Every structure is written in structure tokens, then in C-alpha cells.
Length: 134
Image (tube, rainbow, N blue to C red; front, side, top):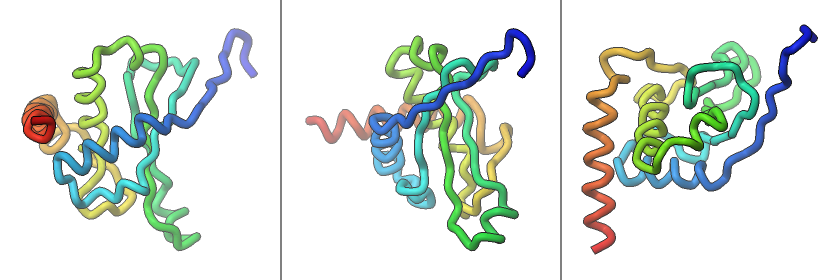
């Protein structure tokens, strides 16, 4: 190990995994299989990112005949410092990286993964949540 390098620690985040399921359901992102999306927290990662999404490489999925899975990594303490609304936007952003065929691939930033789409879906999420709480 290089001098000064830090070991990254990971913990499962069950409460945010449940929140992801709620976002998927509320926004009717029916192409996403909620049981195949998990959330973890990372501590000590040297990145400017607030969150990242990971998947098992397609070669592994094919070789072991396993269904695709996705893991959303929340980078702590950066993610923790966001307010509730911004956290939801980050989670929506990460979910947008999952392609509509749920193949195990990832969508790049651009046409389908961008700030405008995140803001639109966030507004829809808030609207639907307010309608269900009346």
C-alpha cells in the first residue's frame, strides 16, 4: 500500500435502499427491478462525486448466468452534507444511469442522464408524493 493512501470502508445502507424503492415506485420507473438495486455508503473515497452507480460486468453476468444487479455508492461525508431535496435528486440521477432494458449496462451522461431530466423527474416526484399525503 502506498504511503498516505487510505482504505475505503463500505457499509450497507438499508434505509436509502428503501428510499430508492420508493422513488422507483413513485416515478413508475417500471423497467427497474428494485430488488436488484442496493445502496452502500463509502467512507474515505477520494473523489469529487457525491454518488456513483456500479454494476457487475456483462462477462461475469453471462459466465455465471446471473441476473443484472446495480449498486449505488453514496460517498460520505459529501453525500451526507446535502439537504433532503438534493439527496433525492442525486438518487434520481443515479437511477437514470440504469438502461430501460435493465441489461446490466450503464447509460452515459448526455441525452437521458442530465440535469434537466433530473429536475423534471424530481418535480414529478414531489408532486406525486404531495398528492399521496393529502
